[in-house]
Length: 114
Length: 113
Image (cartoon, rainbow over all chains, first blue to last red; front, side):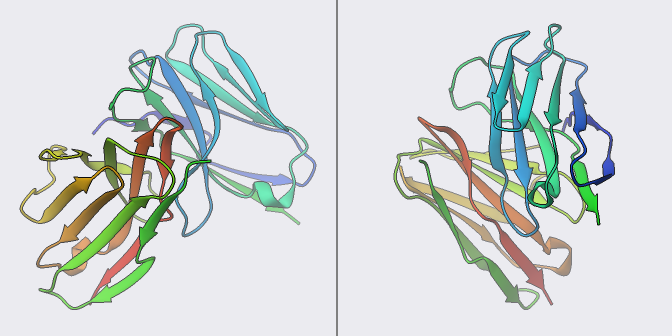
């Protein structure tokens, strides 16, 4: 099935650094979601975006819904050890919660170097 | 908040046997549940979408007779891996769609020996 392209595939940073990652698609999505997955666990929702151009924050996390509706960005400021994990974007073509499936990105693995 | 309980968290079974995985929405009703499979270092791949009281819709390439899905109530969906083989070893994750959006279970690590 289709997957969204995430970049970078992996990141190695030092604690305290800011992180940026993005997610792109060849087609339009009307809802963008960002999830974090810890090892051996299911994904947990970080931020949901419903409108093109929307910028939404959740603590140190900020995500933007691209104006073309074909991309989204996630930034993490002042990274801390618990930020380690895999970050997935997910897109949904609909703009409200019907029973529509999500399309997931390829993931960005974040590692913090001691 | 919305909570989805998935059980078991880990299971080891012999080739040729069947394994059932349960997914329960604890504090909300889920008219739709999704089942995903995730191989190491890869993303989540949707296997099927199930709506309460109706047959599941399987993604292309997923064998419906091998991966049996039952969604008998608004809070419970089950995935049965029949005649399991080592290549079925994977991390299986369910997701329930309710008023809070998509909530994921904690996953089931299946190992077929």
